[in-house]
Length: 228
Image (cartoon, rainbow, N blue to C red; front, side):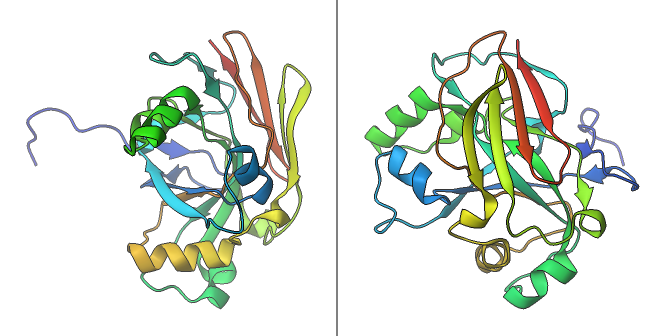
């Protein structure tokens, strides 16, 4: 088929002992750790997790330099467990998610222009330019579920220049992986290649040019990014 111009290449992530994983869409879960909800000034008892998206082109591979983005003076990383799907559908049953739908797991960063997010929130506007900018979704290689098992708990941590900023346990997520896949599949049809960034614990703070970010989830390949 002829196109008006060459189509963009498929965005992929490396996957242990597998062919590259083609990324279709990136879904993110907001307010999925109670301690982070509190530090953002909200009440966990009166709020609930929600979904937003980033474009596939926001992926930044492990051990890369992330250019400091324009229009912000408050760039903040959020460490997250990432779920990679190799099967999709609508109204996916909760009890089938771990066994039939999850290809594997990775470590991701939801990079956020926090000052733009605050301004958008105050004006009741969408967060897109605060969350969905270029290189805003750094992600490690995917560890297939065959090797990682079903991840329901384990240490999640973020260090900046060797100092711990965020530390928690993925078991503290409000919306667990089976429930989040089920809920999301009630809103949209999911497809193979979809990624879900599952939320972040407390401790978010700004980074500056030259900072080295190390994001980890127990049992998975660490994610290391330098702010350029």
